[in-house]
Image (cartoon, rainbow, N blue to C red; front, side, top):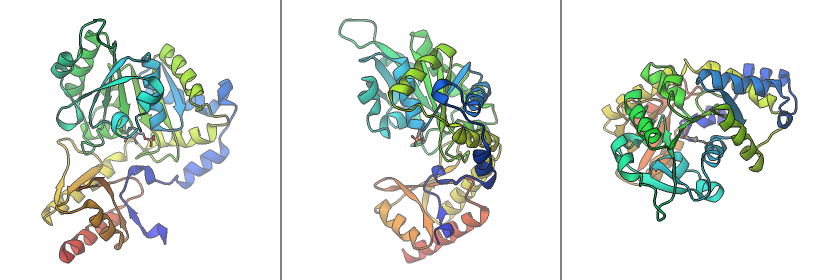
Length: 342
Ligand SMILES: *Cc1c(COP(=O)(O)O)cnc(C)c1O
């Protein structure tokens, strides 16, 4: 029954493949808190290599990856600059204030990114009255901007400005590989100048659990202590890391998700829906609704299609490896029928 749903709420809903489950059951494991899990060590090294950083740290979630990064970059009271629509501000329950005691300064700009000039304007000089400006956090792709992929010519100047002023840069790359695939560049190029990067294995890449934080060896050593403090030190975590290693093989196929999202977008627009995507789209389609978004969500569920809201009058459809062409057809049929129902 549940298997019949087309689930477009998020790319987090993917289930591990048979191959992944087999790799998990056969994973070589050890106690990762002692640094003795070979599969975790292999995953951390693979992620670091992939992003051209020195070291990696396996954590249970993207939220923990971001929060451990913020903790490791800052002291209590330090100022962190972040776009007001970013996940680490908008969707992490205020965790940066709870754990790191960071002061978040919110910036704005189109498609989830503020300009280098805006950052320069907002970072204040050293003065007893000001917090210590310490960290800039970017997000690529940008979730609330509709999965916007940000090219090097957009992010490089912001990272350069941060570094000029002595600030560190963290990139929330929960969907960094979607950005790389959409832009036709390598993921490591997108984060060339970043001091740390978090990636999610459990979204479009299809692992059941897990994220990796990467950065310099000294940074990751610090981050490991914070992971311990947050209770994120897992033991025979190789059973999870084994799935994560296979997930890294799913990068190229993200292009299929992007093609399906584009078909959704074009067809929904042709039906008269106010569907939109960012200038460099990835695996998401947003629809702005004239009435309450929840009404459309309820209506779609009657057709076996699950979608999510992104605001009182906005819904989001996300393609991923468990949504086939047939699933897109069914979704479009549902939206056509809904249009007819009014
Ligand atoms: C999903 C997501 C995260 C982390 O989510 P978890 O559910 O904690 O794994 C972080 N940043 C962005 C942009 C995300 O989309």
